[in-house]
Every structure is written in structure tokens, then in C-alpha cells.
Image 1 (cartoon, rainbow, N blue to C red):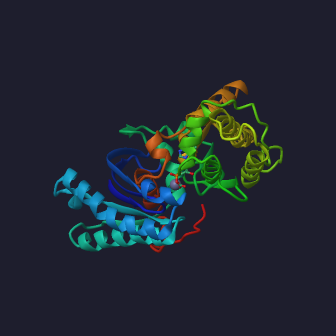
Image 2 (image 1 turned 90 degrees about the horizontal axis):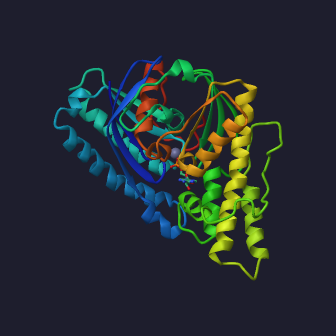
Image 3 (image 1 turned 45 degrees about the vertical axis):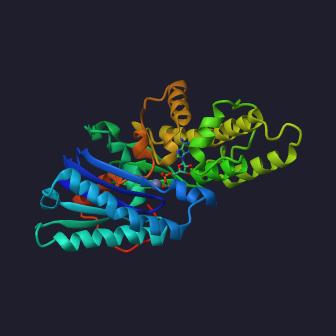
Length: 353
Ligand code: KG4
Ligand code: ZN
């Protein structure tokens, strides 16, 4: 099946063309085209995303990316399509609407030429959840060996721990009660005078710092639940900076804060994920979302899994599929289509998993 997918929930305009096969037991994807147009430079002066600017940029970028797909795939593309998948939430509603309306327009313009074509609404969170099924070219999913699994979605808007019995049967174990972990990275970056988005900047700066130099709090680490909280950690860093006078501002000082903050946040994420993996005796752990692109986190996860002698496989998508993209929306669109899971084609800013 050929899937055209559209993603505009936040500050990336993304369109992908993906071939899917294998059905629900063994879904496999081949990424034919994957375009992402980032708005980071536009939002950077504001230190975060401005919804109306995001909407304006999506409206400008969508036809440009779509034309790139049409050009790349020749005139046959439309006749070939089976599914148009589009993100309906969660995210910024004005931004979501641009993608939904664009998808509807394409659907209307070709539905009489292409019999059986379906327009499928997708949750952005399902996209992140299924992003572990994607590889740069094609990927054979060994679904039988993957489940049960623990999935951790860590992005700018979400921090969710999920137990998956199969690709389609899953349950939320816990989530953040305040800031998402990516949001904490972005806010701490601002305190350190680093540009938006803060995650990659903190990761870079942390390489020059000592992760054990400052003992920042590990919120909710020892609580028996699977919830998270990151706003107190951010506040602890704010006060730490305020209370230091002499050395403040030096690169070493800032790098120590970045490394110690990163360590504190990752300790909580890893500890709770591994505890869930043990409790539910799972076969694999998969992480996804922008923060999952962090190499320090990936390494720490692997070494803790080894250190605790857990017999679990560790999955993380390649970098481009950690951060927002449309290929993951195609994957979720395919699975929703196979399950006949219907979502309303209206923007739902607070759609939950
Ligand atoms: O998944 P994503 O692209 O968008 C959302 O759905 O939110 O995630 C964006 C978030 C931002 O908060 C960004 O700072 C964070 O992911 N991020 C990172 C890294 N790359 C992106 N955080 C830590 N380390 C990174 N390397
Ligand atoms: Zn996302």
C-alpha cells in the first residue's frame, strides 16, 4: 500500500511517501520520500513556538513539499495512492488545521480517480509510538520477538510510559504531571542562554561538563508509580544559577549545569522505564520522540540494561524519526487503517493516547 502522510502539529511541516506491507502481524515500511521543513529559525528569536507563525509557515510550506513529492514520483503518484494519513492531534490547533485541510483538498481532488482511497486521521502520539518500526530504507519488524514491550515517548509536549502487549494493545502506565522532559530541556536551555530548541544544545554543552558535579533533584524517582515531574527540576536549576555569583557565566560552570541536569532527568526516565520492564517482564524497551535522539540517553539506557542484566532488547528510531516527521504518521496511518480505527478529521489539540 502506498501512503501519503502529512504532519503539521507543531513547528515542522512534514510530508512523506511510504510503502507499507505485511499487515498487522508483520508491518514493514519503505520510506520512498521523507521531507521535513523546519521552522526553528523563525521561532528561535521568540525562544519557543508562536502558534500563528507556525500556521503561516505550514500554509507556505505544504504546497512546496507536496510538489517536491509529485516531481520526485512522476505523474503516477496519485493513481498509486491507497491512503492519505494526516495528524489530527495533539498539537497546536491552528497548525493541525493546516495539515488536515490540505489533506482533505488532496483527497477531494483525487477520490474519483483513485477508487478506494482512504483519508485517515492519526494521533501524533501513535506516530511516535510506531516510529520504532521505521528504518532509513526498509525494515523487517520482528513483532513476535518485540512484545510485550515498554514504550517511552519523550518529546517536547509529552512524557509517557506505556506497556504494549502487541502493536495494537497497549496501556498507559504513567505520564508527566507537569512539564514534558523536552520542555524541561528547552526551559533549562533558556536559563543557560542557549538557543531554541534546547535539547540538542544541552546535549552538546553537557559533553564539556561533569554530570556528577551538582546533585540536582530526581523528582518522583522513588515513588512507586510510573508518573514523572520535571518542573521542580527546572526550578532547582533556576535557583542554583541565581545563588551562584562568582563563577557564574563561565563555560565550565554552564557545562556542569547542563551535564548535571541531563543526568538528573535521564536517571528518572531510565530508572522508571527499567522498573516497568522488570515488573512486566517485557522483551523490549522502545523509546521515541525528540529527546530519544539524545545519544547520551541512548548509551545510558544500554549500559543500565546491561548493568542490571535485563534480558530486553533496546530500540530507538534513527535521529530523523525521533524528532517530528511524517513517515511515522504514515506508519500509524497504516496500522489505524488495518484496525479500521477511525478518527474525526478535526483538529484536537489535547488528544490523548
Ligand atoms: O518529538 P519532537 O520533535 O516534537 C514534539 O512532539 O514535541 O520533540 C521536540 C523536543 C524538544 O523539546 C527538543 O528540545 C527535544 O525534543 N530534543 C532533544 C534532543 N533533540 C531534540 N532533547 C534532548 N536531546 C536531544 N538531542
Ligand atoms: Zn512529536
